[in-house]
Image (cartoon, rainbow over all chains, first blue to last red; front, top):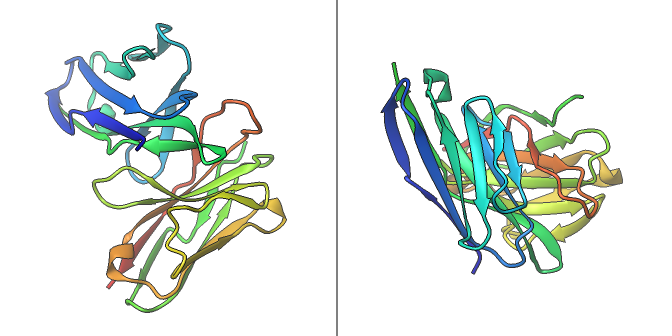
Length: 113
Length: 115
């Protein structure tokens, strides 16, 4: 059965700390991996990764994919209280005649001032 | 570009009542998804449309849930009758995927409380 596992489940840090969030997967016919930030209700898109070893970067956030070891990490440097959110990982794979996304349970990050 | 629109934002109903949610995807997006997100969990796919055809409804509880996407644009998701365990946020998402890799874009969701 396809699955996506995120770790840690929750994390509390202080402003200025660096955090690393993990996403491992077992998905049939992998096509892409996506990271989302969910603050209130709607997940907002952060990164889409399709190739191993190519870092995607946006400000203090960066992410990389390892298709051999089947995982991705999301790094946040110099954390701010506004980074407090749930970070979701979704993996796209092929099953039952279509591409579909499977989500992990998320990592809840709390950044203290 | 306008985002994915959903309504209502909140809904409170009693068990055994019915409820309907509406979604308007980003213009031109062929693929539309309905997800259920229970507190503390990741989104779970209920149904996926490609244009106005269903491509995956394997996790839709068909005895009580139904969805349609007439004319390949707007979509409605209905629950009848609702159960306590249906309390969740219902997220609609769309993507421009027509064979190409593209991210999901989510609406703000509808928070359903069943009492």
